[in-house]
Length: 261
Image (cartoon, rainbow, N blue to C red; front, side, top):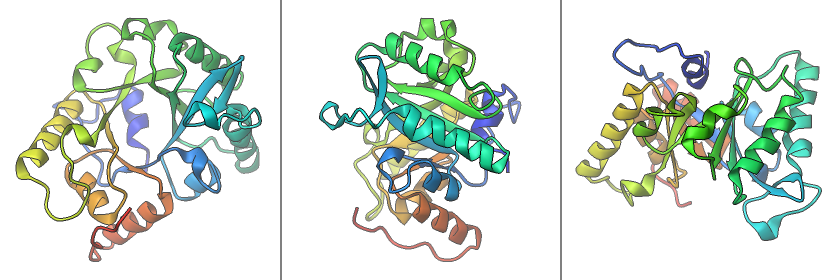
């Protein structure tokens, strides 16, 4: 089944009245570089989106979550660009994948320019028909989004960012679940909080933008909740577990209770 995010970004609205959610959300491999098998494990689990944190340091794009974790050998090129090239060479196919690059550097423009240069060397892979690059974290001013290559897209924080100057380059909307609730899968969520989340998703879908929540629980109860409110990505550090959950859910088997993270 073709990924939602790619249908959106090709600017083909699925329904005249707004976003038409898919039967199941995509798997979003959060901080994928921390996995035992970065990239390959997420692809094997069927993830439609992968998240990578980067710092621009001395002209190199290094992958890490915190500055003190930076290692010269852990470059974006080594961990993701070359493995994607190897994957395409081996399979003969470019994966339909969203690569969400969370920029940690303070100088967002310099970082995005460096990313544009790295990905631009491989247009056969990084394009609007293949691996879609979405910039998150520290982003340039929205009015400047249009100055970057057309294969560079941006992450928004709310439906309003899809309107106005630069809004056409906002590919998705990502927001912390903590903005709405402290609930993480145990017990019952407050109904007012649930309604606020449903309304937020609906407003984003009305703008034809898919939705991802971060800082959420990573357990079956939360996965089910994400499905129930119509969000488009399950944010997870456990891609295999989400794949198993979605497979089980498709078979209408009982969903497990929340687990401790």
